[in-house]
Amino acid sequence: QMNYSNAGANVIGFCQEEMLGERYPQLLQKYLFDPLGMEDSRMLGSDLDGRSVALGYNDQDREMPLMATKYMSAEGGVLSSTRDMIEYMKFHLNTGDAIVQMAHQPLWEGQYGDFDAGVEAFQNGGAYGISSWMSLFPEEKLGIFIVTNRSAPSVHQTLNLFVEQLHTALVQEQLLNH
Image (tube, rainbow, N blue to C red; front, side, top):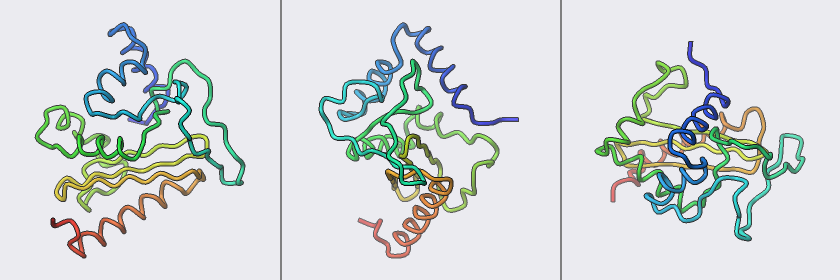
């Protein structure tokens, strides 16, 4: 039985460091951020260069810390600008790319949702008062990314519902046709 595991993602991160001889943040920079032109993306814990970062709040309206100090954060912890997230989605919408095809292979036998609405891939995450959701709709060449500085038990379901409603409205209004 497959279950998602933050610890498992971190083990993969440690393996990548050992195999490639570089720290995980440098590997992301070299193999993801630089090739995609993601100039405003970095791992939490790296130098923020004085940039403003929105603080998150939990479901009890408490301000959350920006990050936890730990050696490995392969399970998450990437800060990106809106422009960089657009570049990331554009890469994943290039369905002719062999890397994208490999990354979009179906996993978990539909365990994580109903993809009849045309969603080929989704990604969600959150920690320390921040929640995000990204859905890709390759047929329309559309990616939708939402991030909020609120975390609560139902936030991801709410973000998913909003994305579904927005996608339906865009398709119905034919706003996707240039």
